[in-house]
Amino acid sequence: MLQKKHTPRSLLFVTGLAWLFDAMDVGMLSFVIAALKTDWNLNEIQLGWIGSVSSIGMAFGAIFFGILADRIGRKDVLIMTLLVFSVGTGLSALTTGYLAFIILRFFVGAGLGGELPVASTLVSENVPVESRGRTVVLLESFWAGGWLVAAIISYFIIPTWGWRIALLISASTAFYALYLRYGLHESQSYVKKHVIVKRPKIITSLKELWKPKFFRATLMLWIVWFMVVFSYYGMFLWLPSVLVLKGHSMIHSFGYTLIMTLAQLPGYFVAAWFVERLGRKWVLSIFLMGTAISALGFGNATGISSILIFGILLSFFNLGAWGTLYAYSPEQYPLAIRGTGTGIAAGVGRIGGVLGPLMVGSLISRGVSFTVIFGIFCASIIIAVITIVFWGRETMGKVLDE
Image (cartoon, rainbow, N blue to C red; front, side, top):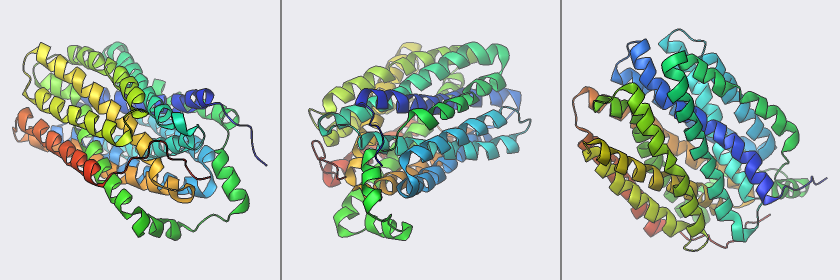
């Protein structure tokens, strides 16, 4: 029996809030890392492992929950992921040691990594083709809202009340999962397909990704996801700490990061406007090139004016690219393997998210300049652009199968 359908706007809002809560946790972690350095006297390599363990969890979660979404449905998996990361965040606020904290960050990351590709798949399958790309990019814009909330909470809460209170606030999002249980409906395409057709075996879905029909798309997505996530987590998880290392106080670095975060929203909105006019492939390439140039500028910036200008541009272009990538990825595959294909691509990307923060911590501890560090991120993003230009295919206007 088919369920009631969401309107595109209501579906965007319901899933967008879950997306916002995920972003709030990731954004808050960058501020918590800066606070933990002082509270627990951690070195740069230990700080890098906090971000990297979260990304290991995200890689596992994206793959595991992506495959599970093709087996039991998008709605139930979305609720599972929200609960996993909320409970994990709450427990991490109660830890008193480094080891327990990073173990819990693995589970938090698993929930976060699973939620994002499953939510984008759910939305992609339930909005009209003419507005599908724009809607998924707007879904990603809730990420900027989450980072903004994280920056506000961190700015006002952490210096006065401590990082534990900030994490407990983030953990309260578990209550939203209870609402989703009754307020969210399953993907109509998924319901129709699996009323009639037997669910494919997991090994069959995995083999399908590498058949000639999808080989180029799969390889393209894996490379692009890896490079984008490697650069994003390497740069943004370290952003407040980089500002502190450039000579600014923790409270000022939080404030500057808040200003940079505000630029994410117009980045999403501009990408959403162009994605149904220029297409996914070229909008993604343009925004990634803007990210590469901004990263190079930020690495060379010294004065606060240049730091803010390039930081704002970095947020604008990078998050606009993220929104387009989430719109582009589910459109590469048919329904039977859409969750699997999107989830595994995101999971491969999270491997980059493991290496990025670790690389930054290691290079900083060796005295390597920020010019070199951000130059590496610039080069990685350019590799992603070249891959999209030569191997990517345009999917604007393509009707997804049901």
